[in-house]
Amino acid sequence: MKEKQLLERITVDPTVMVGKPVIKGTRLTVEYILNLLAHGATPDDILTEYQGLTLEDIQACLLFATKSLENTDFMPLETGKA
Image 1 (cartoon, one colour):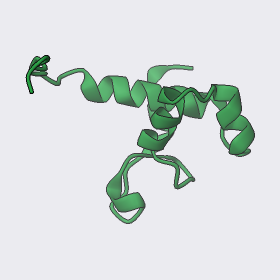
Image 2: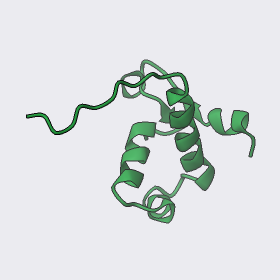
Image 3: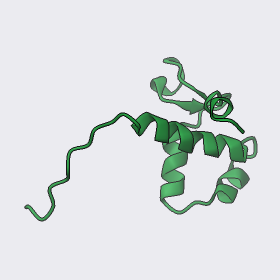
Image 4: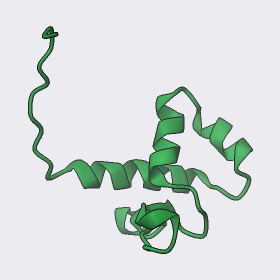
C-alpha cells in the first residue's frame, strides 16, 4: 500500500479524542497503538483485541509517527547527572 493511502487512514479532528491523531472511524489514537507496540503487544495481539482494525491501520500509525518526527530536532539527553 502506498504511503498516501496509509496516511489517509489517520485523521485529526478537534472533536475526537481532543484532536489527537486517530485511526479513521475509531477512537483509537496513534499514540495508544504505538504504546501497545512499545510495551510488547504484537500486531496480531492488537488485531485480536480490536476486531475492526487491520494490519494496514497499524502500519499507518507507524508511518504517521515516522513522518511526524522527520523534521524534528532533538537535543541530546544529559545522562549521568543527578
